[in-house]
Amino acid sequence: MRKASWIRSPHCSGRLGGDIGAARGDGKSMTKKTIRTMEELAREIDVSRPTLSRYFHDPSSVRERTRAKIETRLATVDYVPNFFAVNLNRKRTRLIGVVIPHLNDIFQTNLINSVEFAAGQSDYKIIVQNSHNDPQREVAAVETLRSMNADGILISPLGQASDTAMLRRAEAQLPVMLIDSRAAEGAGGFDFVGNDNGQSIGLLVDYLVRSGHDPVFLPMPPVNMSALERTEAFRAAMARHGQVGEVLETGGNGYDWNFEAYGKDVMSAFFAAGRYTRATVLCASDRIAMGALKAAHDFGLFPRGKIGDFRIAGHDNDVLTRFLHPGLTTVEQDVPRIAREAVEILLRRIESPRKKGEAPVSRSIPARLVLRESA
Image 1 (cartoon, rainbow, N blue to C red):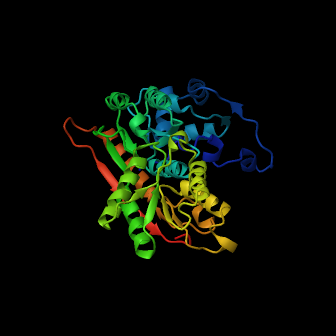
Image 2: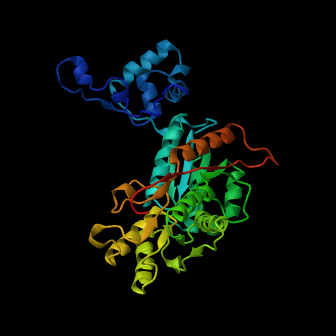
Image 3: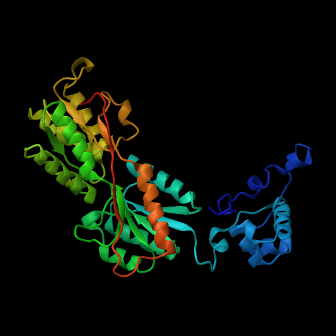
């Protein structure tokens, strides 16, 4: 790992020991001269701009005497380096672009957090773009990151709605890697790291079949390829038990990422018709399960707070699931590992692009079963 640079800690006073007034011993803060450009700062310190740029990029790249001179003078001015000015004309910006479909999603925010940490371990920063589940915004997000000279892009695509031709054009300029969800069906050729949906859904099905009634499946709205993968994984897991898995017909196309409302509305309609009140319902995500759980409470399926014949399970182990009543049985995706391996592969592609004809990397990360009171 490279030594810490000014880009990692942009506030000069913090890097050089904090309050100048405290250093004077009089308890008073010193009014600092505001410097706005690197050219102005170079004149103030009396060093060349290229030397100053090298210092901000990597302090160890300049001579010790020059470094000491720069740091002494920086302590007396108010200056925050411009990220792009520091990286002007450099081969790498040390920026990774991240495109996700929805910020208002616990799993996606956890993924961003883990990607940022993994990138920071190699002194990279991330810039996040939200596609808002809109194919045109997804295109605009990727083009924005290309215009910012990001070194690589991690994208959680919209699946069938994604413009795969656009992704291929972007990959001709910089590494593009899929994370969490794949591109449109049949649109191979991209590196990918994500959850092993076959394994995780299989864990839940095996447990639910073993411990009670065979489950029915409440699928996700078709927002990405993971939604389709989990439905097919459920059918395959039930087939291993000699059963035809029942997937609930929901008409969920209009809900997009409003998973809680979708789960509540779909199950409320079934409960009102007297259906599935004694069933085991396996939900494709925890957020869907939260909505379905609310519907179950509304229809009295947990009389006097007790768990009856109705069982429910989710997928993801969102942070709120253990605080629900009853606590939600689910599977936990290994988000830190997904992020770490995705960043590692992307950084490898940045240093050594994939050769023509070289097979893309595809890694499916196993999940673990989390048992609670709901099933």
